[in-house]
Length: 414
Image 1 (cartoon, one colour):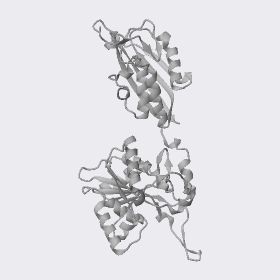
Image 2 (cartoon, helix red, strand yellow; image 1 turned 30 degrees about the vertical axis):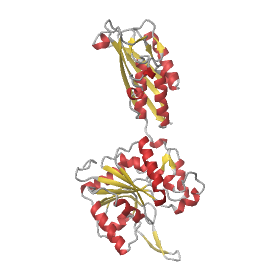
Image 3 (cartoon, rainbow, N blue to C red; image 1 turned 135 degrees about the vertical axis):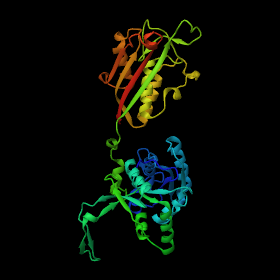
Image 4 (spheres, helix red, strand yellow; image 1 turned 45 degrees about the vertical axis):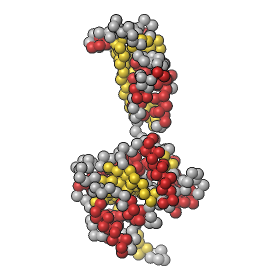
């Protein structure tokens, strides 16, 4: 089964960010800006809970999010979520609500905010920011197939003993039957709601929703958990938030393509520019019709950088309808796109560029173009390659009506 949700079985997620974190509160006593709660601690430039929100939103099966915050923080956190979503859209609907005194109260209040058509729910602790989209997908798929409840669990490698009140050993448990349980936990909504209602009526105390479902008599499926899906619980765990995360961020590759037309006999009223390529003038080259300076190579490079940053394309950022960009040096576009790449925590390490043109002959200019691009990207000269080729008389470039360029840029986490 795929992670796609059947149209009549939508699944939402409840993200718990209402805990007080008593075991870690003392270590956070000096934190500025209300970060005394662990769920508000900074992780990669955003509050801890936002990392989980981003992960949940990347899974196709998840159709919406409920954020559960402490009552006293609800208004402030709702505004913050709106601000974060405006800058980095989650791409799905979300709601906020106040939590309760216990974890199970916060879950119950979060469930009450789900839309009426909701079929299943994932419940996740924001204190587990390192859960992956693959784990979310695994739990969601179990619930959307035939599981009433599904939870991630890890095999226990330590020997586990039960002890008496005086700390003497009572028994040694068979660790082959033990699992260390994580979140997100997934459930069909109707039986979970019924279990919460029964727990409230009968005064049950549980540590997670899986225990509540077990007590209500429902089977709970265990799917493989993740070693890195640790919970930020004790002061020592804070080191995990400041540890380098580069290993978890993959390299990125951006691809850019651009085309410009040469000035022709029927273009008397067109804006024509002297040929620029890679930031250098090409003496004797045909004039290029363009709003900016018409540097097709730097335009392709700009789009490749914007691809790395997932920031749209050059036409969105620098529209040719804006008078401010008329005859603008294309190096300005490259610098702005590079800024966006760095803001995302990446740095270019290599660029491979190709110009396709029948005329002019570009061989004598390739080294200078490469050197100029390397300077713009702040790379060593041997990290930039510029190629020039023709299309052997074919197409508009072969007919000497224009030229085009392709750029490929590789970037690594900074």
